[in-house]
Image (tube, rainbow, N blue to C red; front, side, top):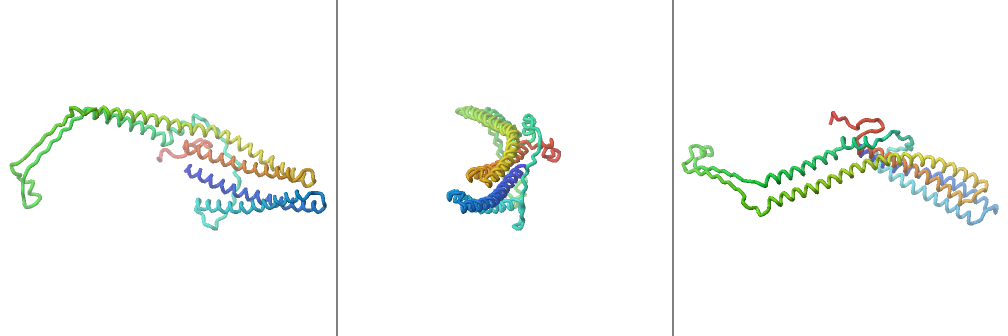
Length: 310
């Protein structure tokens, strides 16, 4: 379930990225169209140069191209999302940016304990250790081996199958065979060494897998706080960049700054919005990855499954 949730997060934010990119492209197209008309009027009045007018016109053409590409990206991601959710082609939707994130504290000790107690991976480590011990026990048990074989036979004839086993003839035979290896040319010793070497290798691999298992949880727990801080910074940066662009736009309209500085403010506005969306994506992906690795819901302090039903 948590793995599916992680996939859903990826599909959700991929579509949200395309949706926001289209909104940005349309907004920039409208603004660049207005700016072009203003710059064209200034050029006709002789207050601006042909170079600046062409620069604005080029920006307008790029905005139109961005809107077309954003539309295509949105349609592609809509199709992927519909396929993932099993929706028909007539279904349409518009996503809202999930700005509210759950607030909770994560104890590293609690996360590791939950991962060890709840994940089947950790039980698999113990099973692999027992299997390695079993192979050594088998090799040790075969060091002193003797085979005892016994057989018995009797002759008879009859007109049907059942009569064969009634009053067999006197010709009977019994064999008893005892096989004890006197010299095995070091085979048992080699078998024992092989089992011990396999156990040592298995212990090393298991120890490395345990370290990787714990390291994945530790890294994710430490990343969560950093990602949460990045979300707050990106949110504030997005707000500042939006306000800065409005100020720059107003200053451009009254001729206080040129088109180059306005374009810089525009680029920073768009980059700040995309950075905020990417920070939210990273948070929600890490959130569900942590739930998947520990099978524990830290926001509600409860297991993600009922152990009595498992």
